Image 1 (cartoon, rainbow, N blue to C red):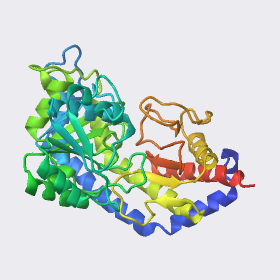
Image 2: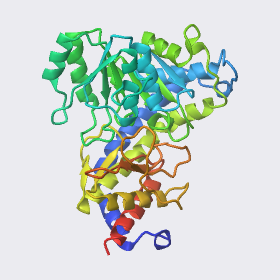
Image 3: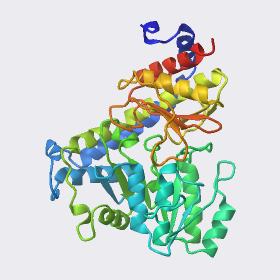
Length: 418
Protein backbone atom coordinates (compact mmCIF):
# COMPACT_ATOMS: atom_id res chain seq x y z
CA UNK A 1 0.00 0.00 0.00
CA UNK A 2 2.84 2.40 0.74
CA UNK A 3 4.44 1.92 -2.68
CA UNK A 4 1.06 2.26 -4.40
CA UNK A 5 0.70 5.61 -2.62
CA UNK A 6 4.04 6.81 -3.98
CA UNK A 7 6.03 6.24 -0.77
CA UNK A 8 9.39 4.58 -1.38
CA UNK A 9 11.05 2.17 1.02
CA UNK A 10 13.88 4.55 1.94
CA UNK A 11 11.50 7.36 2.93
CA UNK A 12 9.36 4.97 4.96
CA UNK A 13 12.42 3.59 6.79
CA UNK A 14 13.75 7.10 7.52
CA UNK A 15 10.45 8.21 9.05
CA UNK A 16 9.95 5.07 11.13
CA UNK A 17 13.51 5.25 12.45
CA UNK A 18 13.06 8.91 13.38
CA UNK A 19 9.72 8.21 15.04
CA UNK A 20 11.27 5.57 17.29
CA UNK A 21 13.69 8.16 18.69
CA UNK A 22 10.98 10.72 19.56
CA UNK A 23 9.20 9.05 22.48
CA UNK A 24 10.39 11.65 25.00
CA UNK A 25 9.31 14.60 22.82
CA UNK A 26 5.91 12.98 22.14
CA UNK A 27 5.34 12.39 25.86
CA UNK A 28 5.91 16.09 26.59
CA UNK A 29 3.34 16.97 23.95
CA UNK A 30 0.84 14.48 25.41
CA UNK A 31 1.33 15.91 28.91
CA UNK A 32 0.41 19.42 27.72
CA UNK A 33 -2.51 18.00 25.74
CA UNK A 34 -3.86 16.37 28.90
CA UNK A 35 -3.69 19.65 30.85
CA UNK A 36 -5.41 21.63 28.09
CA UNK A 37 -8.07 18.95 27.60
CA UNK A 38 -8.92 19.10 31.29
CA UNK A 39 -9.08 22.90 31.10
CA UNK A 40 -11.48 22.82 28.13
CA UNK A 41 -13.73 20.10 29.58
CA UNK A 42 -13.95 21.91 32.92
CA UNK A 43 -14.90 25.10 31.08
CA UNK A 44 -17.69 23.32 29.17
CA UNK A 45 -18.99 21.97 32.48
CA UNK A 46 -18.73 25.35 34.23
CA UNK A 47 -20.76 27.00 31.46
CA UNK A 48 -23.36 24.21 31.38
CA UNK A 49 -23.07 23.71 27.64
CA UNK A 50 -26.25 22.10 26.33
CA UNK A 51 -27.83 21.24 22.98
CA UNK A 52 -29.73 24.50 23.19
CA UNK A 53 -26.40 26.26 22.53
CA UNK A 54 -26.18 24.58 19.12
CA UNK A 55 -29.22 26.53 17.89
CA UNK A 56 -28.92 29.14 15.16
CA UNK A 57 -29.95 32.74 14.60
CA UNK A 58 -30.38 34.73 11.38
CA UNK A 59 -30.73 38.38 10.44
CA UNK A 60 -29.57 40.62 13.26
CA UNK A 61 -28.78 37.69 15.54
CA UNK A 62 -30.35 39.13 18.68
CA UNK A 63 -30.38 37.01 21.86
CA UNK A 64 -28.18 34.21 20.54
CA UNK A 65 -27.61 32.05 23.62
CA UNK A 66 -25.14 29.83 21.82
CA UNK A 67 -23.00 32.75 20.67
CA UNK A 68 -22.90 34.08 24.23
CA UNK A 69 -21.97 30.65 25.60
CA UNK A 70 -19.18 30.29 23.05
CA UNK A 71 -17.70 33.62 24.11
CA UNK A 72 -17.86 32.64 27.78
CA UNK A 73 -16.07 29.36 26.97
CA UNK A 74 -13.30 31.07 24.98
CA UNK A 75 -12.84 33.72 27.67
CA UNK A 76 -12.44 31.14 30.42
CA UNK A 77 -10.15 28.86 28.44
CA UNK A 78 -7.91 31.79 27.46
CA UNK A 79 -7.89 33.45 30.88
CA UNK A 80 -9.69 36.54 29.56
CA UNK A 81 -12.23 38.90 31.09
CA UNK A 82 -14.23 38.61 27.88
CA UNK A 83 -14.03 37.35 24.31
CA UNK A 84 -15.46 38.18 20.90
CA UNK A 85 -15.78 35.00 18.82
CA UNK A 86 -17.50 35.51 15.49
CA UNK A 87 -17.87 33.97 12.06
CA UNK A 88 -18.07 37.53 10.72
CA UNK A 89 -14.27 37.61 11.04
CA UNK A 90 -12.92 36.39 7.70
CA UNK A 91 -9.48 35.49 9.07
CA UNK A 92 -7.02 36.11 11.85
CA UNK A 93 -5.63 39.03 9.85
CA UNK A 94 -9.13 40.50 9.64
CA UNK A 95 -9.53 40.21 13.42
CA UNK A 96 -6.15 41.93 13.90
CA UNK A 97 -7.26 44.69 11.54
CA UNK A 98 -10.54 45.17 13.46
CA UNK A 99 -8.66 45.32 16.77
CA UNK A 100 -6.12 47.87 15.51
CA UNK A 101 -8.81 50.16 14.09
CA UNK A 102 -10.80 49.75 17.32
CA UNK A 103 -7.96 50.85 19.61
CA UNK A 104 -6.03 53.42 17.59
CA UNK A 105 -7.05 57.00 16.76
CA UNK A 106 -5.47 59.66 14.49
CA UNK A 107 -2.16 60.77 15.97
CA UNK A 108 -1.70 57.57 18.01
CA UNK A 109 1.49 55.53 17.75
CA UNK A 110 1.59 51.78 17.18
CA UNK A 111 4.86 49.97 17.85
CA UNK A 112 5.76 46.43 16.79
CA UNK A 113 8.54 44.91 18.93
CA UNK A 114 8.89 41.71 16.89
CA UNK A 115 10.02 43.37 13.70
CA UNK A 116 7.88 43.64 10.58
CA UNK A 117 4.51 41.90 11.01
CA UNK A 118 3.12 39.20 8.74
CA UNK A 119 2.67 40.14 5.07
CA UNK A 120 -1.14 40.41 5.23
CA UNK A 121 -0.88 43.30 7.72
CA UNK A 122 1.40 45.46 5.58
CA UNK A 123 -1.45 47.25 3.80
CA UNK A 124 -3.50 47.36 7.02
CA UNK A 125 -0.74 49.30 8.79
CA UNK A 126 0.49 51.27 5.79
CA UNK A 127 3.92 49.65 5.47
CA UNK A 128 2.69 49.13 1.92
CA UNK A 129 0.64 52.07 0.69
CA UNK A 130 -3.14 51.72 0.81
CA UNK A 131 -5.73 54.48 1.10
CA UNK A 132 -7.61 52.49 3.75
CA UNK A 133 -4.58 51.83 5.97
CA UNK A 134 -3.96 53.02 9.53
CA UNK A 135 -1.33 55.36 8.08
CA UNK A 136 -3.98 56.93 5.83
CA UNK A 137 -5.97 57.73 8.98
CA UNK A 138 -3.02 59.50 10.58
CA UNK A 139 -1.86 56.66 12.82
CA UNK A 140 1.90 56.42 13.18
CA UNK A 141 3.81 53.16 13.09
CA UNK A 142 7.27 52.10 14.18
CA UNK A 143 9.00 48.75 14.66
CA UNK A 144 11.90 47.32 16.62
CA UNK A 145 13.57 44.12 15.49
CA UNK A 146 14.46 41.23 17.75
CA UNK A 147 18.12 40.72 18.63
CA UNK A 148 19.32 37.10 18.64
CA UNK A 149 15.69 35.92 18.88
CA UNK A 150 15.02 38.03 21.97
CA UNK A 151 13.47 41.43 22.54
CA UNK A 152 15.64 44.51 22.19
CA UNK A 153 14.94 45.81 25.69
CA UNK A 154 17.19 48.85 25.43
CA UNK A 155 15.56 50.08 22.19
CA UNK A 156 12.08 49.38 23.55
CA UNK A 157 12.80 51.45 26.67
CA UNK A 158 14.32 54.30 24.65
CA UNK A 159 11.35 54.41 22.29
CA UNK A 160 8.52 54.28 24.83
CA UNK A 161 10.16 56.80 27.16
CA UNK A 162 10.53 59.34 24.34
CA UNK A 163 7.25 58.66 22.50
CA UNK A 164 3.68 58.33 23.76
CA UNK A 165 2.94 54.84 22.44
CA UNK A 166 -0.72 53.82 22.47
CA UNK A 167 -0.34 50.16 21.46
CA UNK A 168 2.44 47.60 21.24
CA UNK A 169 1.90 44.66 18.91
CA UNK A 170 3.71 41.37 19.46
CA UNK A 171 3.50 38.66 16.82
CA UNK A 172 4.34 35.38 18.53
CA UNK A 173 4.63 33.16 15.48
CA UNK A 174 7.51 33.77 13.09
CA UNK A 175 5.41 34.36 9.98
CA UNK A 176 7.51 34.26 6.81
CA UNK A 177 10.72 35.05 8.67
CA UNK A 178 13.73 33.14 9.95
CA UNK A 179 13.43 34.17 13.59
CA UNK A 180 12.23 31.92 16.39
CA UNK A 181 8.65 32.17 17.64
CA UNK A 182 8.02 33.83 20.99
CA UNK A 183 7.48 31.62 24.04
CA UNK A 184 5.11 32.57 26.85
CA UNK A 185 8.10 32.88 29.19
CA UNK A 186 9.78 35.48 26.97
CA UNK A 187 6.45 37.21 26.53
CA UNK A 188 5.93 37.48 30.29
CA UNK A 189 9.35 39.03 30.76
CA UNK A 190 8.88 41.75 28.13
CA UNK A 191 5.32 42.57 29.23
CA UNK A 192 6.48 43.18 32.82
CA UNK A 193 9.31 45.31 31.48
CA UNK A 194 6.95 47.47 29.40
CA UNK A 195 4.27 47.82 32.09
CA UNK A 196 6.89 48.97 34.60
CA UNK A 197 7.69 51.86 32.26
CA UNK A 198 4.12 52.70 31.11
CA UNK A 199 1.22 50.68 32.50
CA UNK A 200 -1.26 52.32 30.10
CA UNK A 201 0.22 50.96 26.88
CA UNK A 202 -2.11 48.41 25.30
CA UNK A 203 -0.19 45.19 24.68
CA UNK A 204 -1.82 43.24 21.87
CA UNK A 205 -0.55 39.77 21.00
CA UNK A 206 -1.06 38.04 17.68
CA UNK A 207 -1.54 34.55 19.07
CA UNK A 208 -2.13 32.73 15.76
CA UNK A 209 -0.64 29.21 15.60
CA UNK A 210 0.25 29.29 19.32
CA UNK A 211 -2.88 28.29 21.24
CA UNK A 212 -2.59 25.05 23.28
CA UNK A 213 1.08 24.57 22.31
CA UNK A 214 1.73 25.28 25.99
CA UNK A 215 -0.56 25.37 29.00
CA UNK A 216 -0.62 29.17 29.46
CA UNK A 217 -2.22 31.99 27.50
CA UNK A 218 -0.49 35.38 26.97
CA UNK A 219 -3.36 36.93 28.94
CA UNK A 220 -2.26 34.95 31.98
CA UNK A 221 1.14 36.68 31.88
CA UNK A 222 -0.08 40.23 31.47
CA UNK A 223 -1.12 40.82 27.85
CA UNK A 224 -4.16 43.09 27.47
CA UNK A 225 -5.67 41.50 24.39
CA UNK A 226 -4.93 38.53 22.12
CA UNK A 227 -6.15 37.69 18.65
CA UNK A 228 -6.35 34.40 16.77
CA UNK A 229 -8.06 32.50 13.98
CA UNK A 230 -10.59 29.65 14.18
CA UNK A 231 -9.15 27.98 11.08
CA UNK A 232 -5.95 27.56 13.04
CA UNK A 233 -5.47 25.95 16.45
CA UNK A 234 -8.64 26.77 18.38
CA UNK A 235 -10.98 25.69 15.59
CA UNK A 236 -9.75 22.12 15.88
CA UNK A 237 -10.20 21.60 12.13
CA UNK A 238 -13.98 21.72 12.62
CA UNK A 239 -14.87 25.42 12.73
CA UNK A 240 -15.33 26.44 9.05
CA UNK A 241 -14.27 30.07 9.55
CA UNK A 242 -14.06 32.86 12.12
CA UNK A 243 -11.63 34.33 14.61
CA UNK A 244 -11.49 35.67 18.16
CA UNK A 245 -10.39 38.72 20.12
CA UNK A 246 -10.02 38.08 23.87
CA UNK A 247 -8.79 40.08 26.82
CA UNK A 248 -9.90 43.05 28.89
CA UNK A 249 -13.63 43.65 28.65
CA UNK A 250 -13.40 47.28 27.53
CA UNK A 251 -11.05 46.29 24.69
CA UNK A 252 -13.27 43.41 23.61
CA UNK A 253 -16.30 45.75 23.60
CA UNK A 254 -14.44 48.30 21.46
CA UNK A 255 -13.57 45.57 18.97
CA UNK A 256 -17.24 44.50 18.87
CA UNK A 257 -18.31 48.01 17.95
CA UNK A 258 -15.72 48.15 15.18
CA UNK A 259 -16.70 44.73 13.81
CA UNK A 260 -20.39 45.67 13.61
CA UNK A 261 -21.33 49.29 14.39
CA UNK A 262 -21.26 51.72 17.32
CA UNK A 263 -24.30 51.39 19.53
CA UNK A 264 -25.01 47.77 18.56
CA UNK A 265 -21.59 46.17 18.87
CA UNK A 266 -21.68 42.63 20.20
CA UNK A 267 -25.48 42.47 20.49
CA UNK A 268 -25.77 41.67 16.80
CA UNK A 269 -24.22 39.05 14.55
CA UNK A 270 -26.16 35.96 13.45
CA UNK A 271 -24.49 32.59 13.91
CA UNK A 272 -26.19 30.92 10.93
CA UNK A 273 -25.78 27.38 12.28
CA UNK A 274 -22.08 27.56 13.16
CA UNK A 275 -22.32 27.30 16.98
CA UNK A 276 -21.96 23.54 17.24
CA UNK A 277 -18.91 23.52 14.96
CA UNK A 278 -17.16 26.23 16.96
CA UNK A 279 -17.85 24.48 20.27
CA UNK A 280 -16.87 21.09 18.91
CA UNK A 281 -13.74 22.67 17.39
CA UNK A 282 -12.39 24.10 20.63
CA UNK A 283 -13.31 20.84 22.39
CA UNK A 284 -11.13 18.89 19.93
CA UNK A 285 -8.41 21.55 19.72
CA UNK A 286 -6.02 20.23 22.42
CA UNK A 287 -5.83 16.85 20.69
CA UNK A 288 -5.53 18.31 17.18
CA UNK A 289 -2.79 20.72 18.26
CA UNK A 290 -0.92 17.79 19.83
CA UNK A 291 -1.16 15.89 16.52
CA UNK A 292 0.15 18.97 14.69
CA UNK A 293 3.07 19.25 17.09
CA UNK A 294 3.99 15.58 16.75
CA UNK A 295 3.92 15.93 12.97
CA UNK A 296 6.15 19.01 13.21
CA UNK A 297 8.63 17.27 15.53
CA UNK A 298 8.77 14.26 13.21
CA UNK A 299 9.29 16.51 10.19
CA UNK A 300 12.11 18.36 11.94
CA UNK A 301 13.92 15.15 12.82
CA UNK A 302 13.54 13.51 9.41
CA UNK A 303 14.50 16.55 7.33
CA UNK A 304 17.49 17.28 9.56
CA UNK A 305 18.59 13.66 9.11
CA UNK A 306 18.39 14.28 5.35
CA UNK A 307 20.81 17.20 5.71
CA UNK A 308 18.44 20.17 5.56
CA UNK A 309 18.53 23.01 8.06
CA UNK A 310 15.39 23.10 10.20
CA UNK A 311 13.92 25.43 12.82
CA UNK A 312 13.02 24.57 15.47
CA UNK A 313 15.10 21.44 16.02
CA UNK A 314 13.09 18.38 16.96
CA UNK A 315 14.03 18.61 20.66
CA UNK A 316 13.69 22.39 21.09
CA UNK A 317 10.92 24.11 23.02
CA UNK A 318 8.11 25.16 20.72
CA UNK A 319 5.89 28.22 20.83
CA UNK A 320 3.72 27.41 17.81
CA UNK A 321 2.82 24.60 15.42
CA UNK A 322 4.99 25.90 12.56
CA UNK A 323 8.00 23.95 11.31
CA UNK A 324 10.57 25.65 9.07
CA UNK A 325 12.52 23.64 6.52
CA UNK A 326 15.26 25.63 4.82
CA UNK A 327 15.73 24.07 1.38
CA UNK A 328 18.12 26.60 -0.14
CA UNK A 329 16.63 26.16 -3.61
CA UNK A 330 13.26 26.58 -5.32
CA UNK A 331 13.16 23.05 -6.75
CA UNK A 332 13.23 21.20 -3.41
CA UNK A 333 10.76 23.67 -1.87
CA UNK A 334 8.25 23.08 -4.66
CA UNK A 335 8.78 19.30 -4.73
CA UNK A 336 8.30 18.95 -0.97
CA UNK A 337 5.11 21.01 -1.07
CA UNK A 338 3.98 18.80 -3.94
CA UNK A 339 4.43 15.74 -1.73
CA UNK A 340 2.35 17.28 1.06
CA UNK A 341 -0.38 18.15 -1.46
CA UNK A 342 -0.28 14.62 -2.85
CA UNK A 343 -0.95 13.21 0.63
CA UNK A 344 -3.89 15.54 1.24
CA UNK A 345 -7.51 14.36 1.38
CA UNK A 346 -8.70 17.20 -0.90
CA UNK A 347 -7.23 18.17 -4.30
CA UNK A 348 -4.46 15.58 -3.99
CA UNK A 349 -4.27 15.52 -7.79
CA UNK A 350 -3.19 19.17 -7.94
CA UNK A 351 0.45 20.24 -8.17
CA UNK A 352 1.31 23.37 -6.15
CA UNK A 353 3.11 25.97 -8.23
CA UNK A 354 4.40 29.42 -7.21
CA UNK A 355 1.82 32.14 -7.85
CA UNK A 356 0.90 35.69 -6.90
CA UNK A 357 -1.36 35.66 -3.83
CA UNK A 358 -3.33 38.67 -2.53
CA UNK A 359 -1.56 40.31 0.41
CA UNK A 360 1.90 38.84 -0.31
CA UNK A 361 4.88 40.60 -1.86
CA UNK A 362 6.50 37.49 -3.39
CA UNK A 363 5.12 34.55 -5.27
CA UNK A 364 4.04 31.82 -2.86
CA UNK A 365 3.93 28.04 -3.30
CA UNK A 366 1.19 26.56 -1.16
CA UNK A 367 0.16 22.98 -0.47
CA UNK A 368 -3.22 23.02 1.23
CA UNK A 369 -5.50 20.12 0.40
CA UNK A 370 -7.85 21.02 3.22
CA UNK A 371 -11.53 20.55 4.00
CA UNK A 372 -11.71 24.25 4.94
CA UNK A 373 -10.11 26.67 2.50
CA UNK A 374 -6.98 28.21 4.01
CA UNK A 375 -7.13 26.09 7.16
CA UNK A 376 -3.64 25.76 8.61
CA UNK A 377 -4.52 23.49 11.51
CA UNK A 378 -5.09 20.95 8.76
CA UNK A 379 -1.76 19.85 7.29
CA UNK A 380 -0.43 22.50 4.94
CA UNK A 381 2.95 23.66 3.73
CA UNK A 382 3.80 26.91 2.02
CA UNK A 383 6.53 29.43 1.50
CA UNK A 384 7.48 32.53 -0.44
CA UNK A 385 9.65 31.86 -3.45
CA UNK A 386 12.64 33.88 -2.28
CA UNK A 387 16.00 33.16 -0.66
CA UNK A 388 16.64 31.02 1.34
CA UNK A 389 13.54 29.09 0.10
CA UNK A 390 11.95 28.14 3.39
CA UNK A 391 8.92 25.85 3.66
CA UNK A 392 6.58 26.67 6.53
CA UNK A 393 4.72 23.50 7.45
CA UNK A 394 1.92 23.43 9.99
CA UNK A 395 -1.03 21.40 11.15
CA UNK A 396 -2.36 17.85 10.85
CA UNK A 397 -5.73 16.78 12.18
CA UNK A 398 -4.25 13.45 13.26
CA UNK A 399 -0.67 12.30 13.70
CA UNK A 400 -1.02 9.16 11.47
CA UNK A 401 -2.11 11.31 8.52
CA UNK A 402 0.76 13.69 9.23
CA UNK A 403 3.26 10.84 9.27
CA UNK A 404 2.01 9.52 5.92
CA UNK A 405 2.32 12.99 4.39
CA UNK A 406 5.92 13.36 5.60
CA UNK A 407 6.75 9.98 4.03
CA UNK A 408 5.17 11.10 0.75
CA UNK A 409 6.96 14.47 0.73
CA UNK A 410 10.33 12.89 1.56
CA UNK A 411 9.76 10.35 -1.22
CA UNK A 412 9.35 13.25 -3.65
CA UNK A 413 12.71 14.66 -2.57
CA UNK A 414 14.47 11.30 -2.75
CA UNK A 415 12.97 10.40 -6.12
CA UNK A 416 14.27 13.64 -7.56
CA UNK A 417 17.74 12.89 -6.23
CA UNK A 418 18.05 9.91 -8.54
